[in-house]
Structures are given as structure tokens and as C-alpha cells.
Image (cartoon, rainbow, N blue to C red; front, top):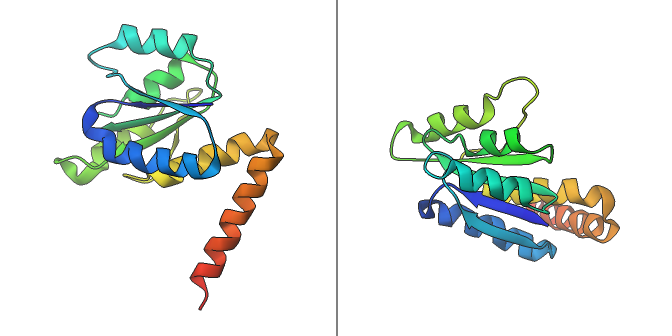
Length: 148
């Protein structure tokens, strides 16, 4: 299972991209809104007690959500930086990708929700042959759709 945590409800469009792709792959998930800055105690409690295999964080502006999650668990964290009204998302990207040694957050492109879902599926497919087959079919379809 995957935990998707967004910093605010304004990140819903990105969350929808992720959940749509996870649904296509048949991957179970739960979606929460927890601000790393406004509800740190709630976030830490959630991460420490979660049974999820990995986390996807969605955050804009300061975008510390992924890093806080990564600091509280040894499970993989995928960060999705969100384009905000300031700095076109570069602030979010740098806040997500520039993690200190020993606390990694795998980071996809700004607003890259679909890639976050695909990366999560790839990680889970290491121990799930049916999911691996779905990913191989997905890639085959991509290849067929890109050659005319």
C-alpha cells in the first residue's frame, strides 16, 4: 500500500493524477492532507504508525513535506514538487530534491504526479510479479503509441 500525503487541499489536482495512475495499476493507497509546517505532530504520528510500503508527498512552495516524512521513516519517499504562484515551482523542486546525506527523497518533475505513481509501481513490482507484468504492458503501449 502507498500513503499519499499532500501539504494542502490545493494539491488535489496532482493527487488526482497519482490516484488515477495507481488505480490503473490496481495499487491500494490512502490519501491524506497533513501540513508539515502546521501539523508536525499529526504528520509524525501518521508516518510512524503507517503500514504503507512507501510514501508519496505532494507539496508546493517551501515543500518540506517529503523531507519530514523521510526523516521519520526508513521506507521510500517520492516527492512531487508543485508549481506555485511564486518562482514557477523551482522553490518546491529545490526544497524537495536538496536533502541532506542519509535522508533521501526520490524526486520527480514539478507537477509530475503520474511519474510518481509509476515510480512507486516500479518499486512495488520488485516483489509483485503481476504488477511487473502490468508495468511491462504499460511500457509496450507507450512504445506503440509513440511510433507511427
